Length: 275
Image (tube, rainbow, N blue to C red; front, side, top):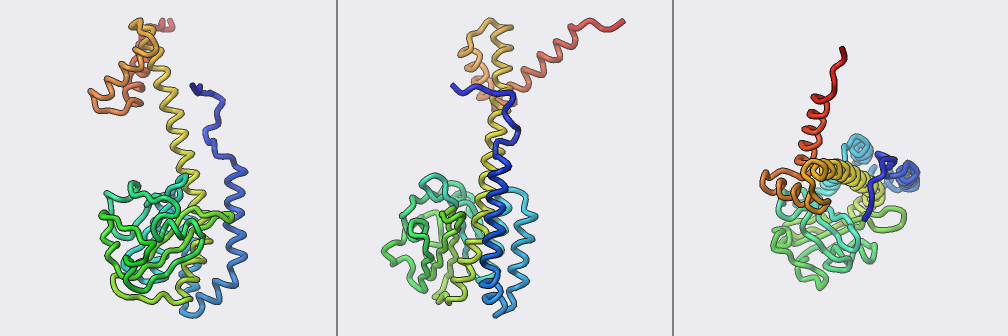
């Protein structure tokens, strides 16, 4: 069993890793600057391209980064739907949508190679279908997504350091021919925001890990108190916490914190008061 380490840093994600990913963002920006300017100037998208930097720089956390990428991509190419899948292991998980899908976001998953989205992730190439997208042999139908009935489909990989970290899909209800400029713009966005999305995902995972470590520590303290005061074994103490969590409908961490607080209060009350 893993043991808690009181010396474990509060932020396990190393500064060097953060710096490396940030550097990737800067390199991508520099390498793509000429391409971006030539593409964007055609229809005064310079302001929009500048805006994405501001939006991502001020985004607070993984969810907001994804939301802003959806907003930005939808502004570049007017569309009826925009979905972002983020790679988690060997699966692509739906993490953000222009249209509300509370039952599908964070739950709908695709294997790499499955459907058009999975094909794009596997081959690291965009796919544009102007009409009857559902008839494409690579298409994967999901009952949770009304967008599956849409006609046109553009799917582009999100890249970081030469590997796929996700896929962004744009869809239209009616026939829509994706011009080369639109495909290049969204592809460029994919390169620019891929590193930022990966960093936000890592920071989110790091935050969850820190929370898990804190929960583990307070649960261990609560178990020790129950073992001492009630003469329980370690397993019995854990089961007691688990049972109270279910009965009270509260997280185990909350139950453990209440036990620790009560013990501290009793300890302070029992301590002799200074004369």
